[in-house]
Amino acid sequence: MTEEKQKKPEKREKAKKTTRNTQASDTQASDTQASDTQVGENVVFIGRKPVMNYVLACLTYLNSGSNKIVVKARGRAIPRAVDTIEVLRRSFAKGLQLEGISLSTEEVAREEGQKSRVSAIEISVTKA
Image (cartoon, rainbow, N blue to C red; front, side, top):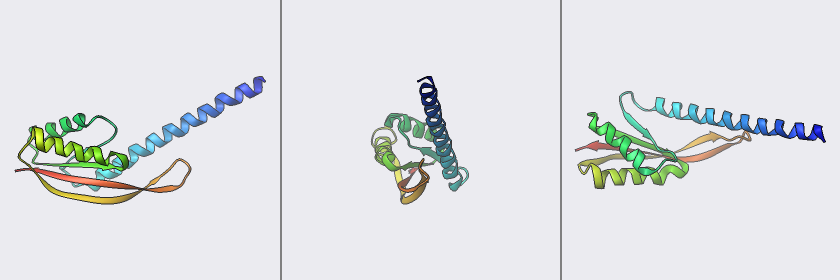
């Protein structure tokens, strides 16, 4: 029985290691996305945080003198990106204009080694 107990923690450690590896690959994926954008653009990547956090990030860019903001999101975060832009336009920075919306599909490697396709959106907004 002691051998079985010793094997179980090893499996848990392996599971933790794979989780850490996927987090590292997520970071690498966001680095790749950042390099795709032009130098000098202010890009806000949307994730799991509340909408107001991203609105605040956009406002920070606008108040620092930037005229253009690009909001990017993938998968389930796409509605949060749209909400961020709408809250920003309607409540905080009423002079913003949509410059463009770009939709795409990206391939992401899963833990099992399979590739899956994920929708992505890029919303560009400028000061009027």
